[in-house]
Length: 394
Image (cartoon, rainbow, N blue to C red; front, side):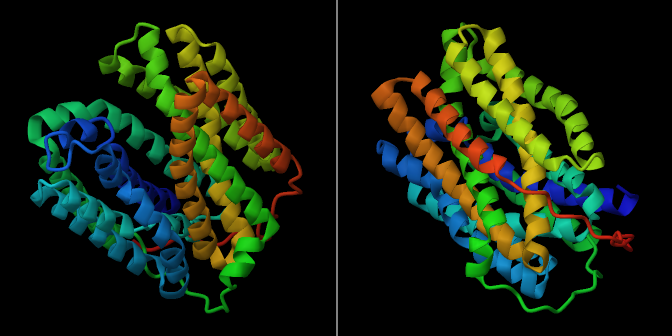
């Protein structure tokens, strides 16, 4: 990437990671804090308050992604970040589960994931787009790892209200970055937008949407069980972050050469299939994992595949979608949110009815189905014959 592409990608990855931090940061501490709030004796209300972010976000991915195609990415991103800040401040000023649920819903209404991903595609050449998407995907993994490290100490220092204030402050910084750092002088090509139905039913995009559903459903279900496996292997909960952070960082060392190979040799389909096989191998290893070492190996294999797919799939969506990138990514991110929700429900049901290991068996079965669907992929979309000039003014 040239300096302009790298600067823009890092800025957008930071904005994307901030929103994911708003989702992940509460996971280790929210259920503990909520027990002392009015209504905290009802698990349903706790789950509703925590999950409201994703539920509302799923409703707004498509409208805001499509809107970003029509009025521009920057306007949508700034509007979404302002809702993120407003929702965080509502949560910070109210010590009540209902108001926290409302605030989380407002935060989720600023669903800018599609606009941010489309903006990355706008500001990068096709030759380097997967690398740019890899940086955005890395922000998700790092947000998850960081949340596991800092959530408990931060909660003890400033309580839950203080954590929401921190998120609001970071949201303001993200707005300043979006306004002052990211370029707004990209030429806007006025073209007739494809209908949502056409975008949704395009076979290539449907295949990618199935993939992101399976990817996120199996991820959430898996992480319902992995902490239990680590504890059963004698590894205390307070130290789990050490494994998560180590494997996430190490996974980038292994995935980058594969990503570069796929781009340079134009073997994207091959690398994508390898990534799915990595996920399948991880699920199989988990079914036999009885030691911390085996669990760590399974997590490493999993995150190599996960990070590859987080880089490749959004990049492919932008290639297939052409001028309707925001709309296509809106559908893609909505499917992602549905996958997160479905994975939590399926994982919980399987754990209760068939035991912990059944989650990995079901995950492996879903991945086999995805592998069969992905195997039928044709050639990847060809790159533009002439690279788009993205040397932008700051």
